[in-house]
View 1 (tube, rainbow, N blue to C red):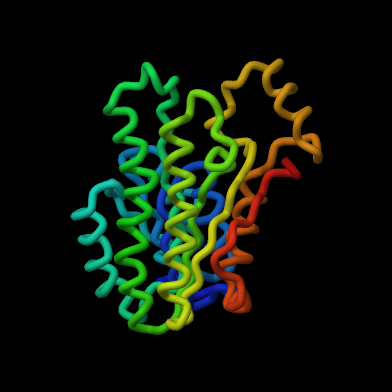
View 2 (cartoon, rainbow, N blue to C red):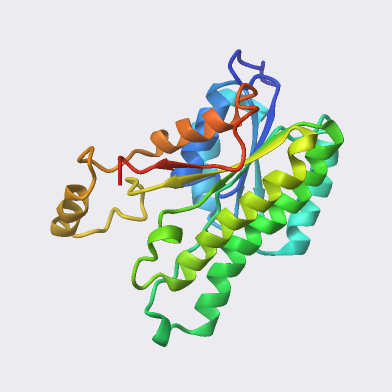
Amino acid sequence: MSTVEEGRFSGQTVVVTGGTRGLGKAMTLAFLNEGATVFATYRSNEAAADALRDQCAEHGDRLQLASFDVGDYDACEGFWNEMDERAPDGVDVLVSNAGLRRDGVLAMMPREDWDAVLQTNLGGTYNMCKFGVQNMMRQRYGRIIIVTSPAGSFGFAGQGNYAASKAGQVGLMRALCKEVAKRKITVNCVSPGFIDTELIEDLPEALRKEYIATIPVKRFGAPEDVAYAVQCLAAKDASYITGTTLEVTGGL
């Protein structure tokens, strides 16, 4: 058993979906470094999960991994039922970060690509928030952060499914925050812009320069920039911040 490190989230239990790669990995590491016990979920990438486990060996059993599809309602319910035993004091923070992209112009988009993106991004947010709220209501405390995207507002060409799912997340957040406020549960979104993860590592150099030229701070963001924003909204002191979207875009 590892000793709990002192930090802003010492003694707290955090769930991060899609928590073994990219943005989710940065969030998992940030919460671990601040003393939390983190349940990082992933769908199927065992190699990334094993790499994270090895990287976080110093944190001992404060890192817990769970493999399931957030778009699967029954799997999500099973995970939260297990949390009743694995975290009997309740979950303090839920970060709904898992996401999927299958880009294509709408007129040519296969129905299965539309369904898959909506089911993972929006359906997965519904699944995890529904059962997460039930868990948090028992202790009358919680912080829910949903990772959305500027695509939900800008509607980039070729991302009709992705944009719809991300706009839907913001609408869900705005409704849910009103339903749970009396139970001292806050619900917010974080909206990252161009972040330097594996999702954009294969961009041609000319296109990278073109994108960076549109960003006022003249660089892509780091995953740690997003993790910082998530932790700000997840803090106990953020009790009067709910129903909002925090953009982490470098000024876009």
